[in-house]
Image: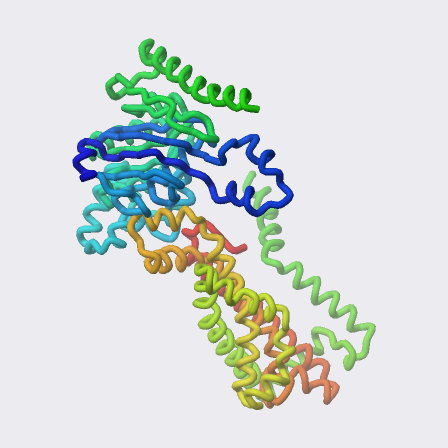
Length: 288
Length: 261
């Protein structure tokens, strides 16, 4: 029944709210804290409030917002690491409850996410091994993915011998090896230098075009959002963050950020982003 | 020209790093201090060397060393076998942790020597009580370091494993275990020092051989030089064993990006 409703839509998010336990505890268990004082800043205690979103199959979708606006929280809910307080996230019409290998995750810190005790090849093979794929097949797929991310020749190295950008490539290859339906990426290039970041952005576009995966990409970098995304979801600021606006990016890849049209477009997105953040601030001021 | 200038500096710093200067200093101070005392009170390095020679000639030293090393080795390995799996489980699974942590935090402050007479009573005067004591002494450093190592694993690694399809059991064996190896190794090193420290207590009562026995009984014959021999042998054994362990660790776990100094 649900599936017929969601044809063509890879991910559907309906009426999603997220409230953190600690905030609830603040109200319930702290005797000395005046609840009004606690919530003066956060009227509802909700990080995300009434988030609704549809993401098409094969789309390169960007979550753009200020730091701490809850975009990573939403990503963690989609990945299955966090539970939504209300509402639901559907992947191909099925409700997401826990992490699964059909959703590949590329974490912000490759340093934290890759396994330093495994070689590059073993890192990339990890998911396949867990899923019981035989050795020969594992090796074939892993080598394919390693080549795709440009790490050919580094298969036998350990992550400690690699640079930050190369570690991030390992992480991307590791996620892709399991052939996930969607790729969830949480500010994956945030810690890299400008040149490495640009290279990886270009390569990610190439990988996306080759594999035709749906990509969910979180960033607070406006330029990155415009450079990569087909569609940008702009978040208002937390608390009560929601998707303020969705903007399709009407340019072909590879994009030139210094093109007058594109920079005009970027300025407009910037305006929308600022409004989304400030509108909320104004609302809080009025209520206070 | 440049090389000629640099070489002696390099040579000196190599000597400094090797610790030879420290050894020379210790022996010098020891020798000087012994000049102001009788050999019964404080024998010098030369007198100790003579005592060592005497013990070797009598053929007792090697037996003592062998039996003590054997006890240390067995007790330590038993400690590893108990403490590593226990530490991994306690570190990873919260219910197990809540159950056992109070025990650990209580008993780790009770030194092995506190159990000496109890163990003799419970396990008899034979090898069992001695090995028990050494095992006890090595268990806690290994277990505590293992638990700390497990807790130190970045939760992102578990998230990554889970989203790549690993079951909780799989992630225990593919993340918890390998991820805590460097910490376990530190624990094993500290466990060895615990085992060596406790050998003297273990052999103090109801033993007829061993370095601890040698140290403890030599006082009866005023052979202070033999006591020093025993101390030097124990110290040397620990020093060498730890060096070897560290070498093994550094080459085996290089890729973890952690090198034990």
